[in-house]
Image (cartoon, rainbow, N blue to C red; front, side, top):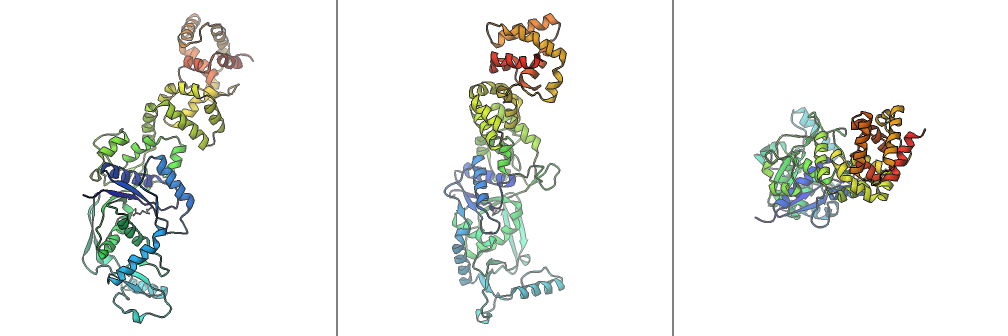
Amino acid sequence: MSQVVTRFAPSPTGYLHIGGARTALFSWAFAKHSGGKMLLRIEDTDRERSTEAAVVALIDGLTWLGLDWEGEPISQFERAPRHAEVAHELVKMGHAYYCYCSPEELDKMREDARAAGKPPRYNGYWRDRDVSEAPEGVKPVVRIKAPLSGEIVVKDHVQGDVVFKTENLDDFIILRSDGTPTYMHAVVVDDHDMGVTHIIRGDDHLTNAARQIIIYNAMGWTVPEMAHIPLIHGPDGAKLSKRHGALGAEQYRQMGYLPAAMRNYLSRLGWSHGDEEIFSTEQMVEWFSLEALNKGAARFDFDKLANINGIYIRAAEPAYLYEVMVATALETGRTEDHAGLVANHNSVLAALPELQPRAKTVLELIDLAQFIYATRPITPDSAAAALLTPENREMLKSVADTIGGLADWSVPEIDAVMRKLAEEKGLKLGKLAQPLRAALTGRTVSPGIFEVMVLIGREESMARLGDVTVN
Ligand code: GLU
């Protein structure tokens, strides 16, 4: 078999949304699995709605997700002359024809059809008419000659054989009167010229596939293999809403999801390999097959994504996470966090193994790291503030007295004296540790509090304790 060529063909009218990201992932994974390549085609023929900013966002989203394509992105718009050439060739071959109907005539045609109880569609008026009958000064459109009887079968790797009766497919336009191609036609010419062997896309394109096959057949071109994947629904089974995850790739990045976790999670939306839930991208590529794509609609579930992300955060290298934290703080406008992270590179790196098991997103990691660079006096959150009662502040004074003179500022030393102090006071260690945590971090969740003290150092620890004990 020839080399597998897939393509991702987004329209640059918005960001790379989650459904598009999944289509790209599957096209990419299938190409990699088969030792082939994925191409990127920007479907920018709609000049009103296509923007350069959207092209940038699409490329940025794909790059962030680590989905690469071969060669330069192809602009569909720039290929318009080729689309026109094929349309005229089809006319010459007798598989398409010029249609001179005016909008009024087409309206009437639809009305007549409706009145006769038929679906409103083009009645083939110019199909067999000679161009000598053409009205003067009218620029024609080009229409394909759809088969008059029989069926078109879309042989689909996900949907099976989907049969379309040709009586439901009229002679649709392939070239407009201004010489620009319709979407239906441009897709076919491009996929053919790009050597695409496998088309993987959303099942909202299934009826388009039937029409596209008419063009392939008319040109005598091989129809690519097709896989139309069910759309992604919300957790309630309804159309995916923004609240339920219909967001752009960059928004997931800004919410603190890791690209590897996104790939893992997205792959499970409509594809499966046994009961496997957590697997590397390499494994996914190795296992990927079109036959394992699911026919039922997938449901997007934020909690599941967050859980998977947490697993990836736990397993990640601190050095990598540090870079992601810095970049995320910058991108989301957290300037104080950004400055704090940059200025405390070593302490953040050292703290990360303690923070990783406690966070499901990079934003949570940043929150957890804030104790390292918090500026004094620390403003406690409400839960921490509740712990800083007058009695507890009094107790923290004795903590400060006890640890202030330690010869060795290390976790075992601090641990030992704190245990002793708790014993003397007849308290559980936690009763000392929680107010201490509130004083030192302003929070009730942090890494082990003695580790925190070593991370921020003796001077800073004593200063923070002083802030809550000296009134
Ligand atoms: N541009 C189309 C879209 O964004 C995809 C067309 C195709 O995959 O054939 O929905």
